[in-house]
Image (tube, rainbow, N blue to C red; front, side, top):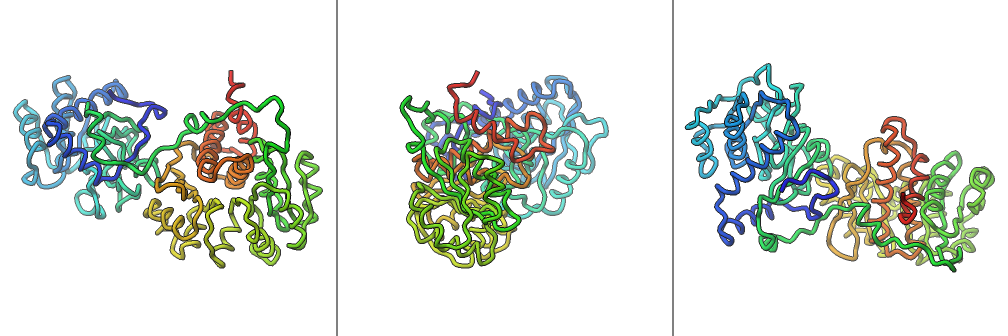
Amino acid sequence: MIITEQASLPDALYLAEQVRALDQTAIKVFGIPGATLMERAGNAAFRLMHERWPQARNITLLCGTGNNGGDGYVVARLARQADYHVQVLQVGDAKKITGDAKTQVELYVQEGGVVEPFQSIDDDTDLIVDALLGTGLERAVTGLWANAIRAVNQYKVPVFSLDIPSGLHSDSGRIMGCAIQADATISFIVLKRGMFTGDGPACCGGIAFDDLDVPPEVYGAGTSNTCMLRWDAASSALKPRSRTQHKGQSGHLLLVGGDKGMLGAISLAAQAAARTGAGLISIATRLEHAALIASQRPELMCHGVEKADDLSTLLARADAVVIGPGLGQGDWGLAMLRRVLETNLPLVMDADALNLLAIEPEKRENWVLTPHPGEAARLLGCSTSTIQADRFAAIAALQRRYGGAVLLKGAGTLICSGDDSSIGICIEGNPGMAVGGMGDLLAGVIGSLMAQGEPLGNATRMGACLHGEAGDLAARLGEKGMLASDLLPFLRQLMNPECAE
C-alpha cells in the first residue's frame, strides 16, 4: 500500500547498508524473487505517478544501469500499456545492465518500447521520472550523469524520483556534487534517513512510501537507530493539570542572558517558556533591561544582575536554567556562564553560551546543547561545511565530546541524547522559521519542559516537535514574514490538547 501522508509514514529510518541487508533477507530467506520486488516497485511508482499527475500523458524516464534503472523500465512498460507517450533515455553504458534490471529492459523493448541514449529531453514532456541512481551512491556525480541531472533540474516540469533522488547521499542527506530536485519521491521497503535532513527535504519534495508487501519479519534483519519525531506522538504524554496544582509544582525556570542591546532574545525565550507551562519564570539580565522586559510581560520576574555572585539567590530557587540567548561573549556573559556552570542544575546551553563553551570546553550529562551548524562547527573545531556534509556524524561527535542531550538545528533537526544511542529527526517545521528569534524560543520551550520535570532527552525531543508544530500552525498565514513571536499563542494551544476543538 502506498502511503503519502507524512503523519502515516513509518518512524524507522535506515542506512543504505541496512537496506541492502533487508533486500537480501527478503530474497534469500523469505523467497521473494528480486524480479518480483522490482515489479512491485515499478507498479507502485506508476500508480502514484498516475494519481498525482493525472493530466501528464507525455513522460520522460531517465534510467541508470542498476536496479533503480530497472524500476524505471517497469514504469515505462506500464505507461506504454496505459497509452502514455513514453521517452526512455538511457544514461550510462547499457551493456553494464545485468540481472533483473536487464530483464526489465528486454521486456520493455519486446513490447515495442524504444530506448535512446541520453542527449536531450522531449520539448513536450509533461513529467520526468528519475530512475538514475539509487541508495548505493558513495562518490560525487560527474560526467554524463551530472549532465543528465542538471538537464532535469533546468527543465520546467514536475520531477518524480524512484526510491531516492539521484545524487542525494541516502545516509547523510548531502548532495554528492549535484542531485535531482524532485517534486515527489517514492521510497521502497524502508525510508532512508538522508531523505529527512540536510539537503534531503529540498531534494525529495513530497515523500511517499511503499513496503512492496515485504513481510514484517524481514525487518528483524536490520535494526534502525534513527527515527522520525512527530508532535502527535510526542504530545501523547501530555495530561491535564491536577485541579489542586499550584505554581510551585509547575517548575521554576531561570533564564540568563540579554547583554547590553540584546534584550529581545532573552525576552522571547522567557515568553516561550511561560507559554509552554512553567509555573515561575525568572530572568537574570542587564540592569537596564529588567524593567523594559517586565513592562512588556509583567508575569516574568526580571532581575538586573551585573555581577556573577548576584546569581546565587536566583540559582538556589530554580529547577532548571536556560543560558545563552543574548548573552554575548564579553566579560559579563563569560562571568554569568562560569557561575551557572558551578551548579548541578539541569541546563539548556544556547547561542553565545555555546560559543563560550567552545573556548572553555567541558563535559556533563545534565545539560542540553542546541547549536546551529555554525555553533556546532566551533564546538568541534571544524568548518560548517563539514558539519553539513554529515549531520549524523556531527551530532554523534558532539554528544560524545560534551555529553548530555544535543539538538543540531537545521532542515531536519537532529536530536541525540545520552539515554540511548539513537538519533531522532524532527520532521515538524518549515522554512518560514528561518528568522531571528526562533532559536531563542526553542531554548525557552526545552527549558520549560525540563523545569516541569521532563527528563533531558524527552524534553529535547518534545520541545523540538512542539516548536516545529507551532511554526507549522503559524505558517498557515504564509511562510514569508513569519515572526518568532507569532508562535507564542500556538505553543499554549498545543500544550493543551484537551482544549482542541
